[in-house]
Image (cartoon, rainbow, N blue to C red; front, top):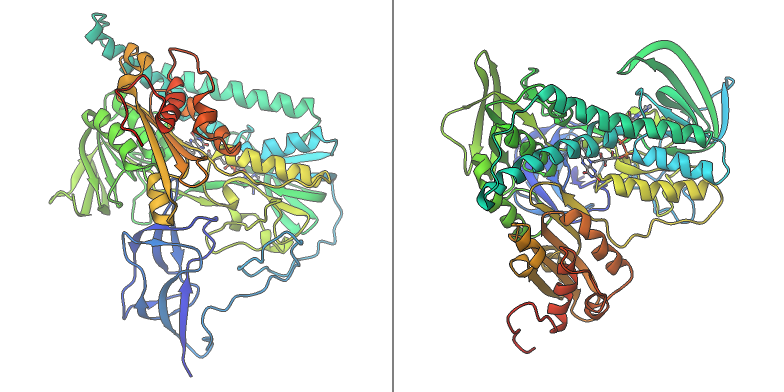
Amino acid sequence: MSNLIELKVPDIGGHSNVDVIEVFVKVGDTVAKDDSLITLETDKATMEVPAEHAGVVKEVRTAVGGKISEGDVIVVIEAAGAAAAANPAPAVAPAAAPVAEAKAAPVAAPAAATHSGTADIECDVLVLGAGPGGYSAAFRAADLGLKVVLVERYATLGGVCLNVGCIPSKALLHNAAVIDEVKHLAANGIKFAAPEIDIDMLRGYKEKVIGKLTGGLAGMAKARKVQVVRGVGSFLDPYHLQVETTEGTGQDKTGAKQTIKFKNAIIAAGSRVVNLPFIPQDPRIVDSTGALELKAVPNKMLVIGGGIIGLEMGTVYSTLGARLDVVEMMDGLMQGPDRDLVKVWEKYNAHRFDNIMTGTKTVAVEAKEDGIYVTFEGAKAPAEPQRYDLVLVAAGRAPNGKLIGAENAGIAVTDRGFIEVDKQQRTNVPHIYAIGDIVGQPMLAHKAVHEAHVAAENCAGQKAYFDARVIPGVAYTDPEVAWVGVTEESAKRDGIKIEKAVFPWAASGRAIANGRDEGFTKLIFDAETHQVIGGAIVGTHAGDMLGEICLAIEMGCDATDIGKTIHAHPTLGESIGMAAEVAHGSCTDLPPQRKK
Ligand code: FAD
């Protein structure tokens, strides 16, 4: 009887063709259950895929640099022990019946527990986690007339985004951008003295921004009569959540507990930073949260992970005076957008970096008195360990699905901690919904908010669906890199026939007037329908302009729709209209186009 088992890619949040950046096993290796097999990387996160069974590796069906999708076979193993299944990769049917719209969960749903005690609070909708997903769900549900309880372990609402993510990083990036812009004015005859940076005041500014926004949320919760309960929540069964009350600025438990009984629940418990196991504890080694604390500006800084979060924080520290190295296992920085956009960013930012180590891996980190010594392996690895004053580990984020007692409610959670949902955001337990980072990629605040509204509306008895055609992505670097929908690279990979139109900012009056004409705007059209299906912008304020392309895609616009829409002159946004004119053949701001 054959003991061979295929170990496959589990749920990766609906992504397909994800990059394989590490393969930990080779033929002949013995793997234990939960040993990491490979690391995958999407545009914002890195995740390791663990083995579901123990055994000896007989075949490895993927390699570093390859692409992989949910359900693809990673390795074939000969199972260890008599318990090994004769059939490959058994799929376990969920115990709790999913709603009609739900797709079958490929992960096992545990049998739910039953709570026999009383409840301190009762509500229509319990929302677990007050990040952008959670507070938006709570507020929308309350606006629809439901009695809502919002559970959050930290003192302030707003989650990662407002407290240690989107907002503080942009508060710092804004200051960095002003410093950089002022430097450029020297070329126009306007000279300022070198900036004097009071890092305590800068940190204070960032805290003030956070305070303004999180305080605003607290006020809006009150105005909507959303009851906020502070503490760590964990499901007791499918209708009860226990909250261990917390106090102070962190998660210190008071010892008090409260039980909340709910009719519907929305899980919005988000994600956390991925820690690399071989990295020692040292105040000079930080994650994104630590980097945002801005304790000091190092002379020499290493960013591990060339994704958006690492590059945004690197920009801030570099402008404040640090010299940067970046190490990235993939062969390019900033995965996601087309390479032509990233090249513009790279050229403009080359001055910040001493060493860009793509195709290179960090293999050892040692904390010594005079600095952090890091050893690399791969294409651009220096021969000797390098010394740094600060190391930022920006290696992705992991979902919190395994930390909330989901099993007691009968909710299926994937090995990596994601909770699967259908298009109504329902989990396999029909009255419990999940939204935001915890349900999959892309881990972005705007996705969480839209999912939140869907979940809340369904709790109120409406029939709402998450049916967005596209979810935009933006790197708030300088210049910004913004993209949405189909890219040239994804079209090639997925066999989609496209037409593209590019408007170079070297021909944009406003970009030239601003002294920032390095960018361009690109539109991607379906070659058959001629509808716009993707777009990207690299340049200052690219992220602010991307919304027009998102709307055009959602509305099924073609080049004429966009080109005939009058854009104000002179604006950077005009470049979108002009890119559409390029597609249409009617652009008069560029040299004559070749006839099609
Ligand atoms: P979260 O924001 O993670 O919120 C989850 C909340 O649940 C947290 O407050 C947590 O304390 C609480 N919680 C978890 N478990 C429990 C429990 N058991 N009991 C009680 N409370 C619990 N996204 C963008 O779109 N744009 C950006 O520019 C951007 N920049 C980023 C920069 C950085 C440095 C980082 C780290 C992230 C950034 N993101 C950005 C990602 C964005 O922050 C997340 O996608 C977003 O916060 C996800 O929202 P969420 O509601 O799913 O979860």
